[in-house]
Amino acid sequence: MSNQNKAATPSMRHWVATSPHPLAAAVRNVRRGVHGFTLPAPRVLVLPYLWLFLACRSAIFFVRRTLVAEPLFKAYCTRVGKGVTTGIYVPWVQGKGDLIVGDHVRISGKLSINFAARFVKRPCLEIGDHSDLAHDCRLVVGKSVKIGRHVEIAGGVTIRDSGGHPADPARRAAGAPPDSADVKPIVIHDNVWIGSQVLILPGSDIGEGSIVSAHSVVSGTVAPYTVVAGNPARRIGTLTPPPDRAHLTPATKPSPAAKPEASAAPAADGAAATG
Image (cartoon, rainbow, N blue to C red):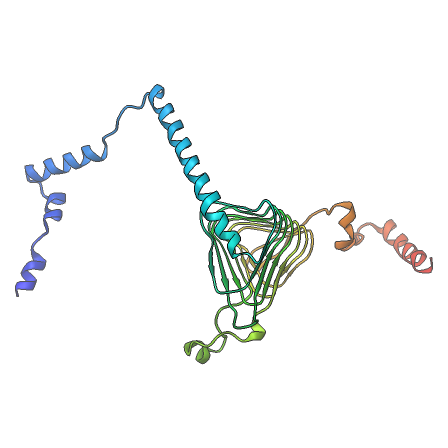
């Protein structure tokens, strides 16, 4: 009975928020005044204040980057190239594996790398020259993840060559690891652009020069110089490769509507075959 009486008695906070009593109304007025309080900000005063703040912040970030984050990241690396830079955060690396980083790689923010060494002796993550990984990227490496040269990876991207759990419910409930056959290496070829919040699943092969649109889920092969989007990611467009890379894309087939050209095409094919 006493517990019911306590539950029925309104709290002081509830009384202040709802009561029409003059004291409660005065407290509410004071609270609104505190929340709405602001000081004037003449530019002649606040601009130097801002400049001082930015200068101090830049100095602190420079020290954190050059003396803390970058040396510790390079200590994780099995092999590291020249000109590798990071942000102010120390990458979060779990497990043991080979981390191979090329020249002028940029780690722009927080980075999480999880090596799962139960499938191979030394899982390998390779990041090619001039590639850039933005903030909050997560990589799970059970066997191999290879990122090519000049790859741009936006924020929030997850790359994992292992699902982390077996497909069988009983084995999953028992805490068993995934089957080794379900752990499939990932390859991201040169000059790929991966949008934000993309999920790249085991066995994916993303062709050279392609673009993966934001929030897509990649599972399988992405042809070179194509644009994909969706879940699962499907081709929504094609890109024109440089002249020296044109061999990576299939030749454009003649349109059925172009009848004069269509009639000439077999002759051209035959000439090529006989020549």
